[in-house]
Length: 418
Image (cartoon, rainbow, N blue to C red):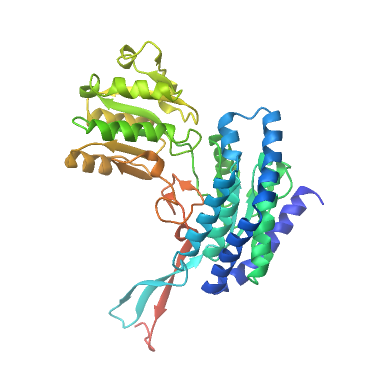
């Protein structure tokens, strides 16, 4: 079968399964999640073996360390997948609730009911955990999903897809509710983007190039997650210990994630009593620093930043540092260079904290906390299907509720319109 026909077959299967999933009871959808957590636990050795095969091939192809980090599955990673599934299991039902019910002068009552979107196509790179998180959230919210992972993770994803199919079957749900695109033919992505008669929403997770291509070519609505050029601003009069702790964690906790700090902005009043310590700590973690002219005076190892560095999502142990006069200049810098993903401030001044929250137009804005918290699991969503930098229809980490729409519901008692 050619790629186009194969993708059309997946779409038709997902569309047929969509009605069954949308009408499945809350307990039945949760039963799938229970079975999935058990299946993942029972399949750990098989998953690790499949992932090792992907890692060997990826290394032979010269993939960067940050991409290998995203691809890698170890025992703790499987445990995190299981925890993620259990978190989604414990979430309330995101569909079927009637909200904002109000009485109108005519006598009717008008409200809105949350409903599944339908069939969702997810195109992603490297991270096999997306296979589990996406499927968990889609089924929980009454949607079916077609998953197109990167070719570098094909063995891992096939193994995880087997766990999903087994769990669906055990929960007496259609196995075509979750389907993995098992061809590595790059034409499969183009075919998915044109399948508007079957797919209701596309969600890309990957590099800026992939997301830009999908946004340009798709004939289907897209929830976009562009690059994560995340900033942290250290304000005048900050608690030095808190600022150091938050800055180091924001950068060094993990380098290859979209919520990792890429630019550190430091109030000039902190040049002598904080910035040298931060620079020393960053160097001790092996982080390369590209700084403004004033920051270069802190250490000769600092490389002079270029204009492009302020826009960069490094996804690597590289950090841009700029000294600013205060909060106004920090906000101005972020407004110019931020990708509107995640930006934070460390401050002891409530008024400036509120100013930062109001004026920074990003999907997540944090006060006195690491940028690494910008994550569906940390936000109590159980998991996330991606982090949207769009403003419609979902923004920030997209969990089960972000995979629903609303329809108006009218309750009457024989009223007619005059």
